[in-house]
Image (cartoon, rainbow, N blue to C red; front, top):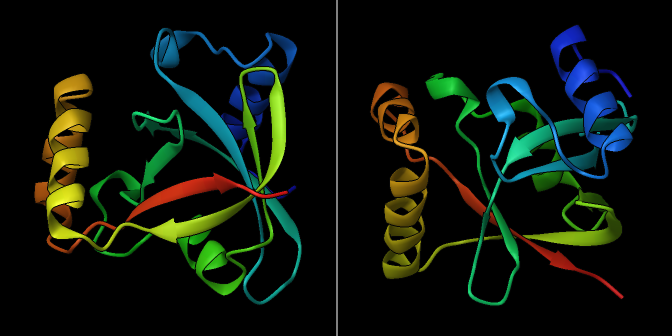
Length: 140
């Protein structure tokens, strides 16, 4: 699990506290997404803020802090969309990635996410690119 020191601390805290983290993530919906490296094939775990839909399915936003390129986890899930593992609260399950392509659904998810986390609007604007929104669906 190649992760930077910050992410490693969040991952450890998340797992130690049944899916909760403190600090800047206190009270924020957070999940752990494990992807298979697009080139390396290695498993990589990333903590991500998520937005549930009406059915409780989590959606993640490939923001990369507003960078002009998508985050590595997004490239990994595009390469291996059926090989994901999601940890949500105390639950862990295999998942598949489904990119949200319907314009109305996409904008509604963005509206809800920026209402919950206003900084996402600044990240979206700063990126200067379309930010993929991905639904993580439970497999099996």
